[in-house]
Length: 214
Image (cartoon, rainbow, N blue to C red; front, side, top):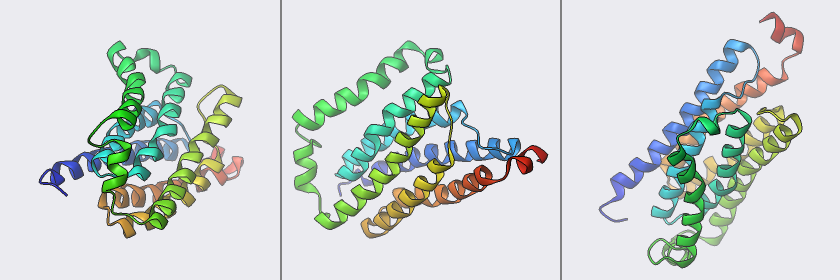
């Protein structure tokens, strides 16, 4: 790693702080309500953190991290639409959010440094480890596809119980990948998430009578 390593890790940690903050805020609001909530802050923090984590993945030559954010990035924007929060964002932020993934894909395909070819050539990860990490990111991303499907059915942003089950499975897979990858950024973000996902699943599985009593 180059002399820029400290600030690269700093960028990754900032992304994970935002990811952790989003789920902690969601968790606290759900605890107060006695049921699982889907606050707007969950999706605004997610969008910004995803932006930063994709940049971190490119700087770390880690395709697993990059592709793990691609699908969920657009689902975050869709949930902001459901929350009627997208139109409240400044026009510049809206355009940057939409154009960023397009510019990122163009750079990955046609750029020089940190292009797909560059990252693949400079990656020191084994094929098996990349496959395992990719599988973990795929499972982790599918939770948002699952959430998106239910939200489209309800025409509002919801977080069904299955979302937390898939989150737990994907998160534990990524924790093992982070340990093998020796990546403290991924490890920190996922360890915090495991606790919150477990608690949200508990809240979601509680009988309705217990929720109303609380």
